[in-house]
Image (cartoon, rainbow, N blue to C red):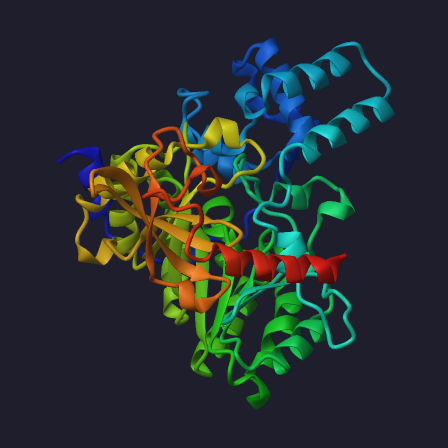
Length: 462
């Protein structure tokens, strides 16, 4: 039996006694010299990592270093690419600008100014999320830490959850982690959230996001979640929690000081009739292949939590249909529901990670052909653009013109959802904004309405 087959058929076991508390040890840019395996790299490589991590956030923990990365395969190892900075993550002109300052020992003020300028050129908040997604109260005050883009779903950014156990190098929310308050979305006001939900009965789904809410102590999470059990919040049917903890720190659900309290809290919510969905971010089957992660999955499922797996298609990491097929098969075996394949967003290190849309669709198609119906719940490739979530359904020829077939999975106007539309085929396009309407049309079917919505939102902001 092959190693892959053995991985896919290994029995799933859970023994809580095997997972005693494990110290959480984290490293940031200041600690590169303390990460022993990095001694394998040359001085030049370590300097490149310092340059890139001066602009983009870096954070990794001992579990990732010991359990996930194959140090005999760096820098190609996908888990290394997922967590450690690479030179190509900055454009050459940006890299050279910062490297020159660091090499000559420039004043910190000058380095900070250059770093700030580079960050603002990296589209820190894509898809108009700062301008168009943040609602206001009845007095016209913007509600910090809340986003309400789609009718049924509200996103909440608890301030205690605005970091992660480790950082993904491709993260589209990298701006949350660089210490610039102007770029940060967060709120510590549970009552602000609850008051907003009371007044918006159309909302059925609440998504806690970040950062990673699972870095929070359970007592803080309880302050946000337990009030939702009151009858006044019966319209909130689903509580989603976006997290990478099952990859980066599965011990959060096993031997952490308040892991039992966390599981009990989630179980109370599910027993009260709430659908609790852990929106887990997985990019590679290797993330699912540790004993601790599989035990944590088992424990969460026993508490009634539904675990859904999603993640972007990333060059250097998972731009291979076999990787996605194996990951989806493993998720199904573990009881995780494959949910989304995303297109890497137009922010941060996009030039290093982006994949042409036609190749993204081919990878999705070829991976889908390898899995059973239970694995075909994963939708994609999906682009979370400003008008909505746009799915690439295929490439075909219509009336002699080669086109992308697209549809909205979600839209700022729900009437747009599930309506197919067509874009001119462009083999170089990597994001929705690169596409043009097909068949000589000057505008998309939704474009005039979207511009009116956008103008209205921006007029309020100004």
